[in-house]
Image (tube, rainbow, N blue to C red; front, side, top):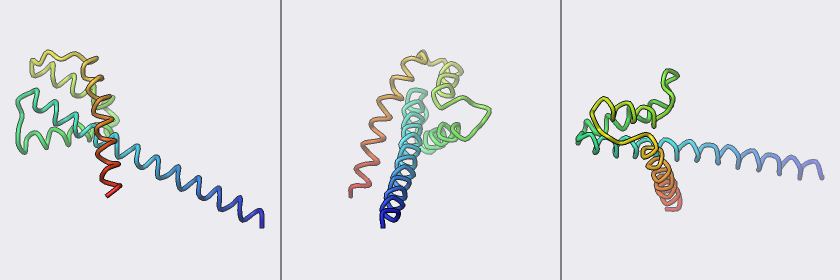
Length: 110
């Protein structure tokens, strides 16, 4: 009997871990999308082009040649002549991470 209790508890912890990892991934992807939209606005990109840029920022997470979304945005700002340094981009990523977390958790709660 005790074995079943431990097995059930282990399965419960594993399921929670998977759910937590999935949510963390979704939060990061949402943050990167929001970062892309923010950066697009700073670069004067709007409409469908802004959405496409945001998708490109998200895609960086899956591209082994790039380091991360913040580096992409920093390089794109330099190429566009936008004077926003990487520390400010990193700060924006921190702010947007919390925004993304709040958005996703409110969507899940509905």
